[in-house]
Image: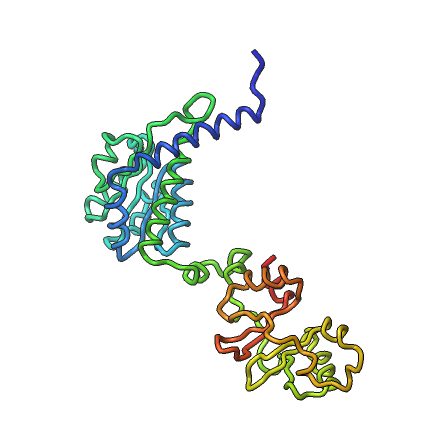
Length: 318
């Protein structure tokens, strides 16, 4: 019989793990809602711990919690036995991960939670295990086969644990009413932070804005466009954007241009954007309309800024 190709092996691994996740979603742990309610009520942090591969998963779960509004910290069980138990206070809750539920290295953390009445959530495949018997809440993993060739390396079990951590984090963030603005506060850097920036964070203001009045002669209008270097000028009436003049408008009105006024050349009712709109939305609008800038206005049309496509690119929105 021909040996399976790497791609065929990969498909089988994904099939096994996907089947376990599908089964997991249909048979959620009975304690899930109660565990979320208790974690939501914790005045301190959620401490997450596990040994080996479970420890790596614990680090990821703690990081996801922390970035979505649930203060959390991963603690290594070995270090906990040598002083780091002091990181776990009576204000905290603990999530311990052990596929077998019999991981010896977790014993000191378990004893610490029992001694100080710290809420303990167990994540394990075995509801009759020592860990599960000590826990206040048990989140049972599906009894599904590992996806490795010998059926022993943590694969399916770690995938399910990771997914369970995501489910807990999302449930908690929705219960907290955690919104985009909160997410931005925890993700100010990188592309993710840039995607959540508001137009008001990068827009040009005040004297930087190219503006004229409807009665401004086109000679002065051209000087304003040139001085401000955006290739566009806003025509204001009582502080509100009544129209804009772009390079394209100039080309379309070359005949007798210098004898005209700004109001005669401007395109009325131009597309604008609100200052609290996402910068990514502004970039999408500019790309869709094949323009390089948008004036920023309040609901009543009052001009407050201008955002240029280069501002979005410099901020990392691409």
